[in-house]
Image (cartoon, rainbow, N blue to C red; front, side, top):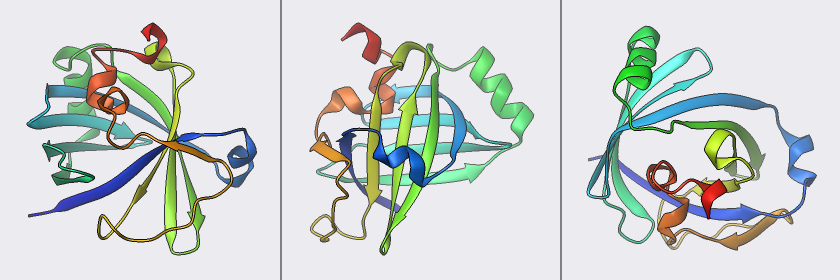
Length: 154
């Protein structure tokens, strides 16, 4: 079984912006139940179906498959829960780690978070100066919850 171990943080300041170019993401959920989420997303000119299990600590089961781009757009437009998640992702390499920063748009405009994927929950890593408070365990920041409770309505 594939496992995803990631921690999520808020961002401080704007210094991170000079470190990477962003890629547009458009994603939606076919099922947003916390026990199992089923997501489709476009990433630039590629498309993916992702199935995730419930999060325990910072770990959850994850399966991801590339799908036809046109099929993904049809699923996003016709079947996905609304509103869709629209964001730009920036990938910033820091030592052996890559930070993924998501800048949200649309109904989640103003939210910017950073994630780091780890090989174990207790793995040590350094935090760049632009990393703020940790929000790993706060369900408000789960993308699947941002469709039900968008950031602009907090």
